[in-house]
Image 1 (spheres, rainbow, N blue to C red):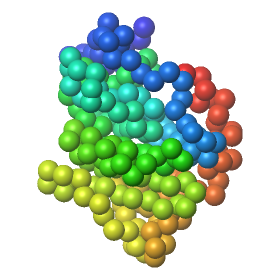
Image 2: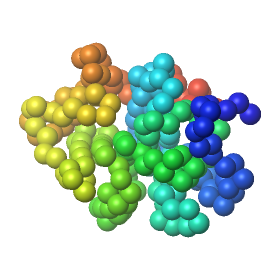
Image 3: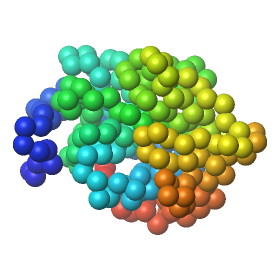
Length: 212
């Protein structure tokens, strides 16, 4: 098995994988939910294709505390900075990765999400150090931005000025009422067009399926 960890870096302990399992299969409740996850995952991989210290995870169970299988969460997409890609990862055991919490988390709303479930997820992300969390409704195109200010994640209001990530440089272009119009990269190039998410997903679905 090839190691992606530089000399001296803390390498994951694969013997612990069975103690901290990942969900079986892919947890998508609808084709639109799946389309957005695939499209975003592909776009982030393209953005960081030449970068070796950004770890992008999809539907990966995150265990923040060693020796405990709860609390845990499997966000749709997580990005951890300062860590190398790891194609063999089965779950994100934080203590095996220099105790680095994912900096960015993205959740795509699905029909099964309840308000209480989303609130619980946000409490988890707040407690364990996420810097930026995006919650996107693929049907209404409404997007919520939760950004860490001081010790807590705060819900930021969006309008015509949108929002730009301090971690990824991505800029959300939104309407006056907060609907997502497009996502641009740090150079102003198109990162994701919501109208084309389904087409991108269809083209990449076979490639994505190889991950599971």
